[in-house]
Amino acid sequence: MQRKYFGTDGIRGLANQFPMTVDVALNLGKALVAMLPRRGSSFKVLIGKDTRRSGYMFESALAAGINAMNGDVLFTGPLPTPAIAHLTTAMRCDAGIVISASHNPYHDNGIKVFSADGFKLPDDVELALEALIEDPSSLAERMAPEHIGRSRRIDDAQGRYNAFIKSNFERELLLDGLKVVIDCANGASYRIAPAVLEELGAEVIATGVEPNGYNINDGVGALHPEHCAGLVREHHADVGITLDGDADRLILVDELGQIVDGDAVMVMLAIDLKARGLLKKNTLVTTVMSNLGLHQVLHARGIDTIQTKVGDRYVVEAMRAEGYSLGGEQSGHIVMLDHATTGDGLLAALRVLSLMRRSGQKLSELASVFHKLPQVLINFRVDRKIPLEELSMSSRRIAEVSEAYGDAGRVLVRYSGTEPKCRVMLEGPDLAVLQRDAQSIADLIAKETSN
Image (cartoon, rainbow, N blue to C red; front, side, top):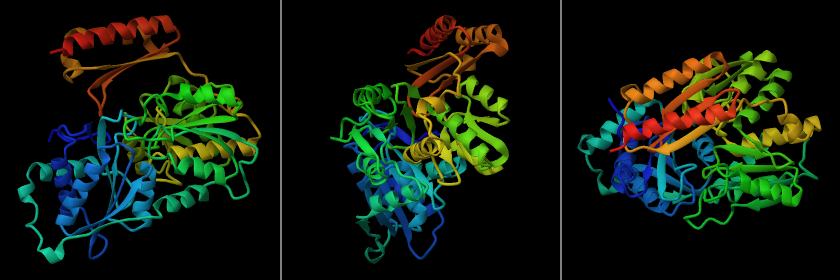
């Protein structure tokens, strides 16, 4: 069955346009109660969101569908995606829902679902939900008035997550004397991230903490680390932390104002965990987007790497299947299954701050072990996602470039799973050649997919 609603990270799209409509949200709420197993006599769903204006209507629509099927809803208000994953299990809920389009602009929104164990739903379950959304008449009959569920707000949700996050930072360590810039992208972490850092003793300079429903990810956050880098240099800070709209990804800035991406974070954490005997099976799980330099430095240190297709859910699936403890994406999703069930930007930031404290090294020194191979990434909108193998000129050009690079580089071309975009990524020793070849491939794909 071809997917119509769910992409690589839940349902996502332009708010109030298919598939991100209140009708779809209403039917999804019904479908969840009808299909997912329940722990107790009632079906309980935790619903959190980021700071987009459209979150209010999706929150109400989902709750209406759940209540109509005799399910109960607990609202948290704005809270990071990993917080909902954690609280779903901690509060013994049957499912958790996050209303967020993550790093996308405010006009988009999305819905992602966690099962009772705090993990994202597998593909087969999402496909089964799609069938119910498509044919809501197949759901159970309407409940009698006395069996309609109820909704209520959880006032201490932020405090619960705050305590959980700090419990993963060594009790003997403090952040006293450390000046930290934190950029919350005007998103879900705008309250909790600065609070956690301050309570651990850091001097905090917070930005991206004034959401208005429309400014999420707008020139701030993990997609725009240059904003944080400027503040790090201006305030002579020790480190900059940038999160995206739902705070499940992390990009760092060192004390020199240099960007430290997800690949560098994974390298630092993998080396540290291996040294302490905590890297299970001496393996890091990444996606195909990770830089070749990551594999080179880790293999030289006796650490294996495994690649999955793009999407942190696929990283997590591989980790769970084989019992690995660390994985992630170049974009900043860092997954530490010994501590959390999904990518958690704030948690990952605290692990790096812990490493800085324990080692006595600056972030630039820790990140210097990673030597990134030159990489070019072009993202562009497409009118149609025609299979690449059906694009004769484009596929021919991709094959030519791949053959020319051989083992010295690589070519990765794919469509986004969450946006109407194509991504062309090339790696190799010569940046000018990479830029030329990437643009030639992008131009051909744009031409062959245009209406």
